[in-house]
Image 1 (tube, rainbow, N blue to C red):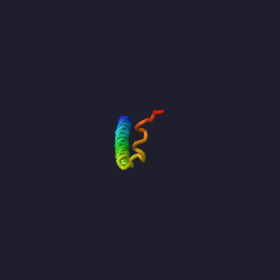
Image 2: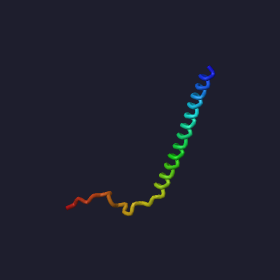
Image 3: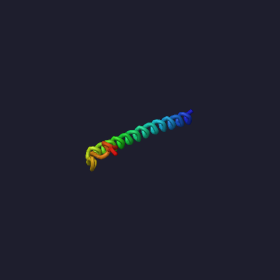
Image 4: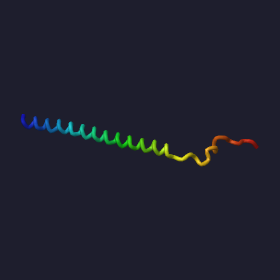
Length: 63
């Protein structure tokens, strides 16, 4: 019985470790995505306007 209890304890500990590592990895991925989204939004805000803002807004079809 002692062997089976230690095997169960090892398996149970492994599950807890796997869950803890999974949660930490998920947290890290979330932090990375948040940083990337902030960088993307900042780049959009800092981007320069189009060199010719009037181009493409109308089409001259007169012959």
